[in-house]
Length: 236
Length: 236
DNA sequence: TTTTGTAATTGACGATCATCAAAATCTTGG
DNA sequence: CCAAGATTTTGATGATCGTCAATTACAAAA
Image (tube, rainbow over all chains, first blue to last red):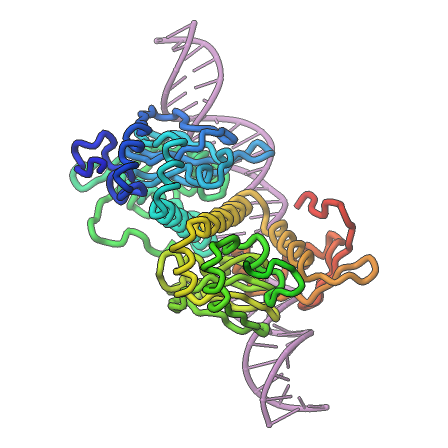
């Protein structure tokens, strides 16, 4: 079997060993997976694949943060998804054998794992359970999108921006006394694309969020009053 | 094999015969499918299943229009999806073996087809290709959601409402001279849930849409100037 | 360090939307 | 038919957002 221990796996926190889409597979396929296994480290800003690219691999985010973005005909673009460690990306392209519909780009130093496309297909052929787990990941993606649609329809832009900051703090924040702080991995423009407003509006939302006293914003440096095990979000 | 001819199939336009998730299956499974096959006719307003229900079947919309709605804790709800003929619903519940997360309700007289859950599972077990096609439907759902997210971020509420009317006219409109007309199958409240605004705003949007001269709105009676093979949408 | 280009903020103003209230319209049961 | 309830529309007002323009802050290169 593939290495199941956390420490010794070359990939770290990754769907190739934990909550894996590949495990368990028939033993005859383990060598195929091992042979096709690829690891890639990305620096902040580096692309993993571009829109309309044809490398139909399933990637798993091992570390860092990957942004999935679609460009529109009019030159604008929408940030469709932030992929956190443990999540897989590129499965649409793999399952449908079509070019990527989004561009994937690391927002911070990141690591992704993948299996060569030919080997991945071979394993899926012989292991229907892998397909079941891939479908399960699709459902997760549907759930994420549903939450986003509901949030867009029911909560204010200010609240949604706060929620994004909160989520990022959970994964990227560093504690200093009673504060959490981080370098915001997203530009104002990225945030605007994410919640569906203009960049100027994001600036003004930051001003208003700051006025509530929980966040302190200065450029990309964000501080948050850390009140563990307590709801941060209130009436916004 | 299952009946592949359009006319004689009990289900009409339906994923059980055309672009089917079940076809082709091994011949041994055909009798299972035939045995478990169910058809159900719904009157306007009639529910197919409720949120948190546990009937984990995959339904295919054969005729009509089904609304999928999730209720929130605060009593509000969001219309997550309009399911048109040929589309399948309930696959999330089926694939994940979990209760439905949305309520399904017919908006007009409708027909749905399904296969008894036990029989469906049996067929999926023995036919990985069915699972592949189910995954493909998941991807379609993801694509629909992505389009909705993009539309919410890039186009105006007025434009989105117009697009919804246009789509409904395509499937429910009846031609009279150079006009298409229909009974709008959605309430103002439904439309508001769909585009993420208040019902009063929908009323005012109708006023503004009407002013553009393409639509005529009177309660639920909608008329549209039919200009075939021409883009209706302009700068909104 | 200075320069230079990009990112972010601020200001002003018009457009759009939410909210609350009231009126009008439609629907349904008697 | 009428009456009662639900749906839809309209009005008024404050909040929020988009847009255009100008300014400030930041970062990379000379």
